[in-house]
Image (tube, rainbow, N blue to C red; front, side, top):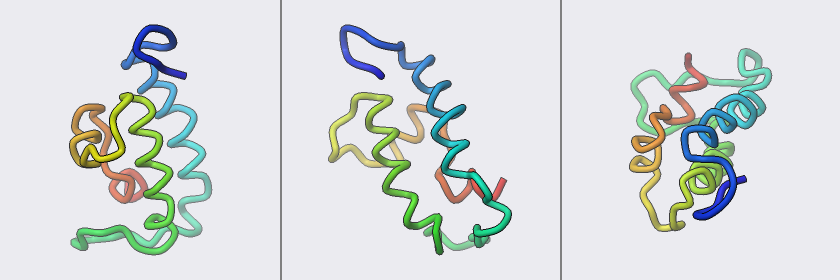
Length: 87
């Protein structure tokens, strides 16, 4: 999907990620999501989906696996998964 010399640019890759992957991750969210409230960590199925969110962000930015997830979310202007699902 993206690479340093070919593929979609970062803004276009972000748009594709939001339109396709985030939509697929949040399918049926009203049935299975447990809102986090003031908790700092997602719970339930959202906690399990966090790994897929992290891998997607790393792919879109071309970041290393050791890059902090909060930094990736900031660079892509993406809210954390639990906040996305709360919305």
